[in-house]
Length: 339
Image (cartoon, rainbow, N blue to C red; front, side, top):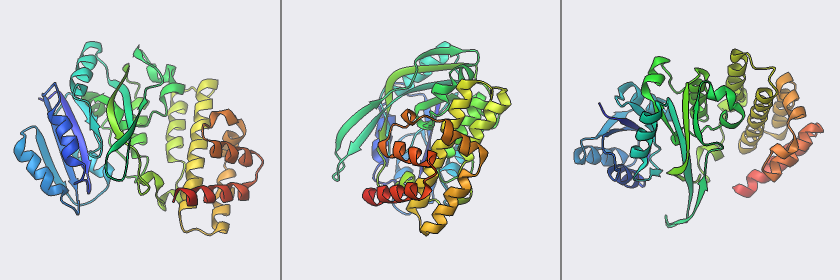
């Protein structure tokens, strides 16, 4: 049985596969399996994966019709045999000591989950990394008992699934799988993980993961029509966890829930600004969203200083003043600039 199962969902990644494969081959702890799920790629990704499988017995390749990243990850989860799970996106890569550091840490502390930092790598048009910025976790240390309840304000929205090592036995005990969403599926998986109160969390302040910064055509900068009808699923999941824990009267937990609802609202506004909806349709969407008591309360209670982005601060102030048309105009101008 391998120590780690690396899970890589692959869709049209021929440009990046050699780099991520090389980072796996350079691991100082070689007792792992890497499961590449070719999710109906239309480029040479399938051929490259097949070549990698021939070259290294630790590489396994599964080919399936395109079903999205959640489906690809779930396929790999059903086949994984490692003690620990590591979700690695094929356009990213990891430091050579990653597997060794994480397994030794998890073994020593008997951790259900180990979180760590990352590098945000920026590339120019020629594919050269021109800047790399460290992004470290909000807390560090060994936390036992009910860490996610105690440090909910710090941990609840650490949605990057790729900066976490998870004990497979814990995942399988609750049969955790990724929901069929085109965006936010990793966040929902993470929320379901901590819903079940993992008893030992370790957070190390070392960046081990290299994240390729989003391009203009990435999922986070694309229109998602399904989100028009169902926008608050991530914050609803977080709110249900707090309610399930019986902590909705806790100021710390309530404030975090309110922040998550506001985040979903801001993302929803960005989404409709990227799509084909008319101004009237966007206005009605925002007006209807603001009629929800939880959304209304969150806009009222979340302070402006919570928003780090200047445009988001302005939009929040406009929302507090019920100036929905101005919010939409500002959001539309922002998306045109990015486009």
